[in-house]
Every structure is written in structure tokens, then in C-alpha cells.
Image (cartoon, rainbow, N blue to C red; front, top):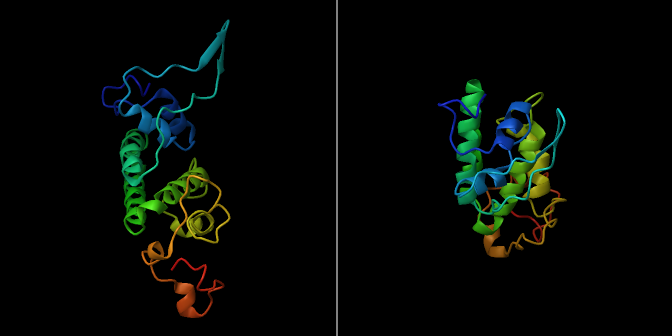
Length: 191
């Protein structure tokens, strides 16, 4: 059992170990909440005779809202993946570098959008049946929906601050504009 292994990464809630083993995306909010927990996580299992009933996890005490939060939560996730699936260690590290670079190329007010993008990517990848975390070309629709100003999920959360003209200058150059294929006007383009 992973939890009892002396070489297993410490402090990872059983629910997230189970998610990893089942090929489900890890909940970084739960991992982030577990970083400084003072009591062990409650087991959300009811028993009736020999049968177990698993209930939904409780709401995490803390949520990932910044690049630093994401990095802190991803570190144990990466360690767990490396422990359970050693062949995925390079993939998890490369993905970590990719998301970190996305954070560093955008203003802090856009970081929650990167976190939303990360959730979308990890939900798509899940058990690695079709995509790897490093198949970036497969995630362009998620990137467009969550990070770009004309994306369908761009204004989906009131917690996301509006981008202003000063923050637009931090995005990389638009390749569609350079090739003459940009459908955006200069008023809505984030590049």
C-alpha cells in the first residue's frame, strides 16, 4: 500500500493517492491544504456491514490562487507521480516547467487563468489514455478558452480581475497577426 511505504512522499492525503492510482487528476487545492495541516484528513467513508460507501471529499481549507500556491501544491503532486509511476517523472517535471513559464510571462492578475488552464489540461489528460501532459499542441483550445480575452471561459469567474491595457503588453507576440490570419481587432487582442 502506497501510504505505508517508507519511501512514499509524506503528507499526501489518501484521497489524492487514490486519484493518482485511478488515473484521475489530482486536486491541487487538497494538496495545497495538506501542506500545513495540523490534523490528519478525515476519511470520507461510511460502512454498512462489509460494504463501504465513499462520500465526496470535503471542501479544501485552502485553494490554489497564485503561482506560488500552484508551485507549492504541484511539488508533492510531482513527487507522488514519480513514486507511483517512475516513468512519468520527466513528464511531470517538464509540465511543471511549462506552467511555471506561463506564470512568469503573464502579469499576476492573469495567474488564476493559468491555474484554470492547468485544471483543464489535467482533466483532459487524466489517465494518459490519449494525451500526455507534454502534448501542448493538444491544449490550444483550453488555452484559448481560459487565458485569451475572447475565450469562452475568460469571464466565467467573478474572481478573475479584468485585464487592462498595461497588462496586454506582457503577452508573447501573436503568430496569427504576423501571418495575416488574426480574427481579432486591436481593441480585444491580448497580444
